[in-house]
Length: 426
Image 1 (cartoon, rainbow, N blue to C red):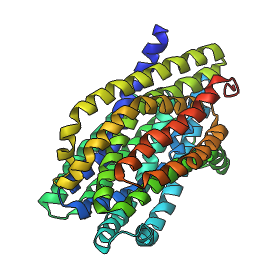
Image 2: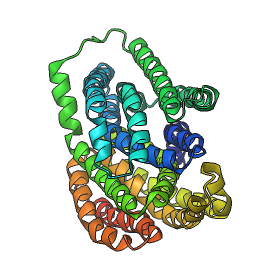
Image 3: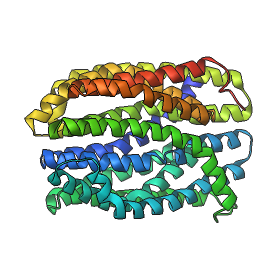
C-alpha cells in the first residue's frame, strides 16, 4: 500500500498545482472584476459559465487521452502512445477554431437567452466575444496535458500552467485598472496567457515526438472522437446541471447571481484540488489495465477513495473557519458578501462527498468506462431536477440543492458501479 500511496502522491501533487491554476484564472478574474460592481460581476458570471461550458464539454481531449496513452505505455508501445496524443492535439485545434467562430458570431444571442438586464448582458457579451479568441488555445492545453499525464509526466503541465496563471494575474491587473479597460481588459489578459501556454505545450510535445509523424491522420481523428464520445455525453450532463443552476439564480436576482458566480468559482478551485487524485487515478488505472494487473487496480481505487474523502474533510474544515472573511476577497457589495457566508459553510460540509465523487469519476475514466459514466450523468441530471425546483425558494436552498443534492445523486450512481467488476476491462 505504501508504494501505491507514493505513486498516487507523485502524480497527484504536481497535478494539483496544474489543476488549481486553471480555476484560479476564473478566481482572479472574479476578484479583480468583482470590485468594478455587482453588474459587471453578474456579467462575468453569465459569460464565464458559457465559456466553461464550451471548453468543459471538450474536456475529453484530456480525460480520454490520459488513460489511452497510459494503457499504450503500459503495453510497451510508446510510439503508439505519442501518435494517440498528437491525434488529440489536431482534433483540439480543429474544434477550437469552430468554437471561436461560433462564439464571436453567436455569443450575443446566447447571452440574451439568460434573460438578464441590458447592463448585465452588455458586460457579459463584451467578455464572451473577446474570450472566444482563447478557446483554441485552451483546447490545445487540455489535449497536451492529457498526453503528458498519460506519459506519467505531471511536472511539465504544472510548470506551464503555473507560469500562465502568473502572467494572467499580472496582465489582468494592468489591463483592468492600469489601462482602465474594465471587463474587456480581464478577457484580453486571459486570452494572451492562454495562447502563451498553448504554444509552450505544443513545443514540448513536438520535442518528445521525434521519429513520430506529426501530420494529422483522418483515422486518428475518428478514433479520438469515438474514445471521447461517451465522455462528451457525461460532460454535457455536468454542464446542464450547472447551466440550470445559473438560470435559476438569474431568476432570483442580480445579487444572487453575483453570489453564485463567487460560489462556483470557489467550488471550482476546491473541486480541482480534489480532482488531482482523480487525474492520478486516470493515469494509474489506465496503466494498470494496460499491464493487466486487476488486483493492483482495485487497490489503487481503494486508496484513491481514501485520499479523496480525507482531503475533502480537511479542506472543508479550513474554509469553514474562513467563511466570515472570504466574501471580502471577492466583492465590496455588502449584500453579496452576506449571501456568501452560508455558501461557504454549505460547501465545507459537502466537500468530503465531492472528494468521493471526483475520485470515482477518475477511476472509471481511467478504466475506459465512458458508457456508464454517460448513463450515470444523465440519471443524475434527472434526479437533480426536483431538487432544483425545491431550491427556487431561496438562494441558500438552491446552493444546497446543487452541492449536496446533485453531488449526492452522482455519489450513488458511481459508488454502485465500483462495487462490482464490470468496469475492470483490459
